[in-house]
Image (cartoon, rainbow, N blue to C red; front, side, top):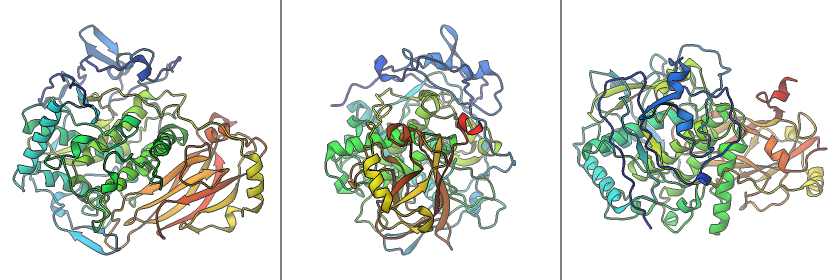
Length: 594
């Protein structure tokens, strides 16, 4: 049942920059148990709003009616930790961040349908403007709170529906028009833009460290446009709370066929009461689906990540080929929701099931609201004892830039460094339980079974390169005997980007039930939403690494020289080849330097 809407404070629409924006202390706090608590605080924790901000007080202190308070304390609740970002990138600065596209050189976007037939789209390119403004974040006088889509009031639904309806009624050449906004995703993701001065190298905002920043800016302007259209600058987009059992169905307001929020191009199998399938696992048991989902969330947010790049995505700079490697959420839950919602009766599983068309479903922005929320939680809420250091200081990350049209139809240039702090951008998220936070599968002793299957399993070196089109099990030598800090590295993952591809990774799995992943043996996944890489070649190569120490702690591996790895493809047919697999010492672990 929808809950009463919560009053949202007003927010200015001024574009005058301010060096130290004042944040309202008005927050929507849940019960103390809804916050992540951590007894000890790391004195090294810092919050960096921008790369230029070298003043700790300016970064950490927030102006309130009570004077200046530490931003973290303001967001603690009782004992909670609104964490910090303190990773210094190990990558050398090369002063060549990805630059915004040249709009008048926007080309034809391409994609492939489910029959592997290439299609071209001539409508992805935005209107051309002769003036580009360097965007300055406006001062924040009141914080917008993005609500859980399952908990909104009828009044909110009416307002939201009206905003989308008005967006759809804008002239077709208005850059704020619904289809023009949807085409932003198409152009940035399906081959329409070249990297300036880099020949035929394309711009791609997926499968790299640009994934979270690009989509944060995308939702930011989309939200402001909707607010402008209904004359309410406090309007905040909802988020689909698919990481919580109470939100694991499509939110009801998107299911009204008479609403502007409805999209007929959705998989009927995903309609409520169907539970979202974050693992794309063939299982009709809703209770098992919920358990699988929570296991996946714990793995992608905490258990499998060793570095900031494991979560954010791999380094992507000017002159680099596209698709260097996706972070854990992007290649996991994010991809699965896209594919789960898209209509299998459409040529390319439109709308949500393909990058070029995903923005045509209003549910896309609700889905990505939760993706952005995951970044916020990872940045500020998760205790440092559970996650790695998080700040990336590489100038090529901070100075990467995009072009968007703002709520006044002005073409603006934005940078990554200005979107690292959601509060500085004027919005926050409703506080919701995080049931996946400590959802680790129970420890299991797999030694007896593994000794039997391990005797017959071949060593990985005899199998790779490996086409991943069926379940395969093999042994991989450990770097160190016992429960050492190690990483499982999947190297040279070469994929056809036009296909849905997904493979799950298990270690020392004691059974062959591939519909259950809520067990200690589950390590992580690789998956992608179909898209086009280039007009001449749809293949891309990347690698991923998965942290092993938590899995080791949950299993009996103390005396083992090898681990037994099982790869379980969730896709049909070919399209993915893995060049090699190995176990290495975790370089981010203190033990690696001893």
